[in-house]
Image (cartoon, rainbow, N blue to C red; front, side, top):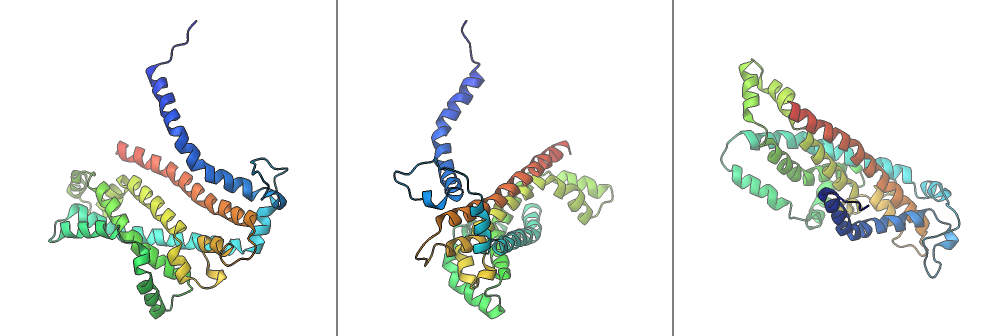
Length: 280
């Protein structure tokens, strides 16, 4: 008896076969990172290289945590990423709302300016930013990264939110005004709940950008107690006569966990916000 597959199943199998090489390329570095982080030190440089090893050495993570001051760098990265994300949203939401709902001279030019700023690399302004932080006394302080990351992510935040705000019907706010609601009430109780999906997506990208940024952090931070995770991992490789690769990979592995957790956690709120907006 022949088994027949529906066209939908055939398309799914074909799509997975086409995507399989890309999936392998994406997951390969993570596999190398995981294997290197948890294998015995004396099995790191075997030749020919193999994926197999004698045992999982979970103590590599605990040794790394104590040796490289990982806990402090983790807290610094969380503080910088969360603070810069909240700051970008705090200023980006009103600006995006103004671009979406109001007409004023130079509006088109300002939107183009926001787009052009996304093409500029932070490395171009790193010297000027460093001198500015020297004037404010923020060098070697995580707060210097909070303000810098929020400023660089602000244009992206406004552009993303303004595009989504344009899809929310203006008649919903007008109906609230007719019922006696003030502009503030209509924005906070009608408009913003409908914009939850856009705010969550923007927050995810802003958080990841702040979490992974390296050049500005390396420039602004001078002491190990103020390092973020990218700088801390770099410090374990640069200028070392002997590199403890199992510790480096263990630190890299642990640095990816918070991003994965945040993305998974916010994804639930993203789906719920989309459903909430559809119902309303």
